[in-house]
Image 1 (cartoon, helix red, strand yellow):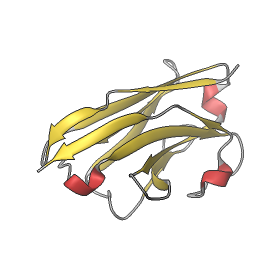
Image 2 (cartoon, rainbow, N blue to C red; image 1 turned 30 degrees about the horizontal axis):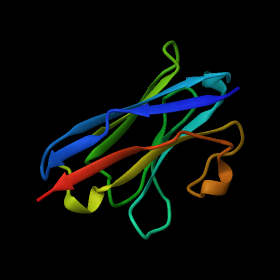
Image 3 (tube, helix red, strand yellow; image 1 turned 135 degrees about the vertical axis):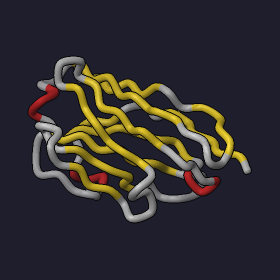
Image 4 (cartoon, rainbow, N blue to C red; image 1 turned 120 degrees about the vertical axis):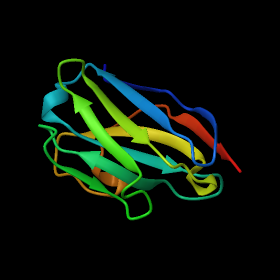
Length: 123
């Protein structure tokens, strides 16, 4: 079955960096658009960034543009989220997601989800 497994979360001070990884199995990775989402306590899950199947195109939410970078390795079947200059408001559970269809910022577009990894940014 399809599995998406995130790792790399943790506690970091404001201004610091973290790199999240999401290892995929059970699917044709290079045929799936990959997205990163996050969900803060008491809030809805929101789109953070995504990357095209080939890795040549990326898209970001305005709140993270210029600080976060999504990349992928289609040999390792892994997608990454590099987060720099982290802010307290970036605190959330971060999820990776995959879609074989048309990409988008809505959670409804994505067929497969990881279990999430907690990122906590302290002031």
